[in-house]
Image (cartoon, rainbow, N blue to C red; front, top):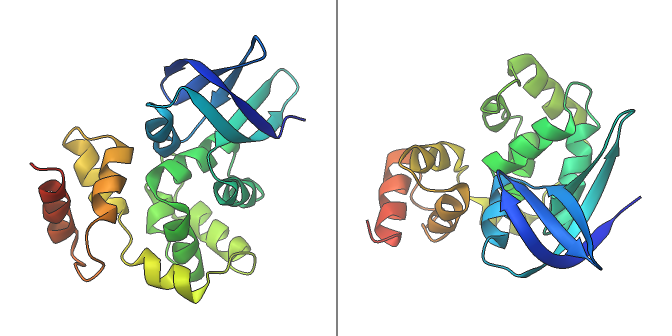
Length: 189
């Protein structure tokens, strides 16, 4: 199984990277957030999850080990496949997903196409005992920005641009509208 790749990005399109490692091109699927982060990189280091099915082998890449770990937890829940887990990671950062699970909040999960309230509730119930957040993570995560990210994406910004702009907004600003306005100010719009 492939667990790690380091190489030159030779192609990137639709959250898919082709990574050249010793003249072999590996096709790696990544979250929208990771795709935005690696867009400007020549050489990339990815933690890899290898998914094997009867007819294909698919590689999923992550910049951080913590993101890979939450991905593995998500796919351990029946009804959540690798593509759905990757979509969840595209919706929000790892700290916010963990915070939502600990707080029994299914709103981030139900925003993903194909995941309804029942499946989202099942994810929260099954992972509540497996996910914990430190007091530092709780203080850092602040409000969940999935609605604000959706709003900024509908305005034409990428998930990465939206997350970066929202990360600079104070956690004291809690309403979605105020967070979006503050993020737009941070982007100079």
